[in-house]
Length: 219
Image 1 (cartoon, one colour):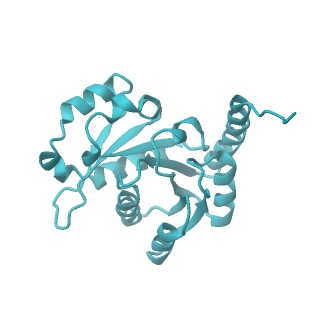
Image 2 (spheres, helix red, strand yellow):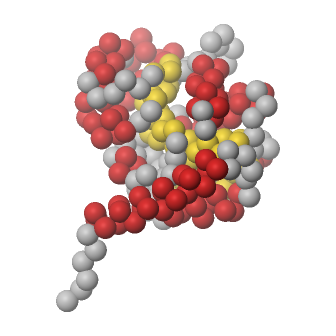
Image 3 (tube, one colour):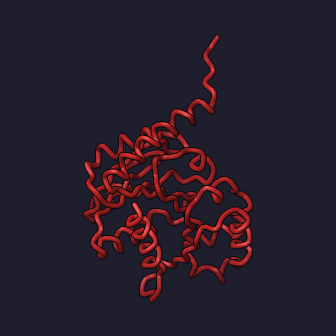
């Protein structure tokens, strides 16, 4: 008879590794920021803008990229001068604490802010602690204003929400009040509205960067 591995046991082992690594990150003044969201939510675009903003504020930034396949996103960050490594899950729908540890070891990163761009998924990533201290979910306006109602575990789990592509609100009929009503039934997480259009006077990125910096200062 084949051995059955209970999911609870897998999550328990993951939690153990996550707690050990969280202690290590904090002791070394490293803020691990877990960026989550559905495919196409704008995670990478947001992360590029956020990394640039933090660099202008004098912070050391690195990125661990999680994708099913390819190194496209990590290559882009490295080309921009931001140290990045890629983790290919080969079909798995989430990252876990053990693979984040392996990716971090490859980075050789010292003191600063390390972003984890999780696999595009609003379900599985909410189950796995990565040893992070800050969890941000990207929810794009074209996805609809009902996401907090449909993905309760994710929106209960996060510390902050980055509402992306806000310049499209009118075009897609996004109801901000309905989105906030659903979110507030689950969490008091702050919401940062972003619109990364060229020549936009207020992209919302500076406010989000300040939020991340405050979390870093609190380590």
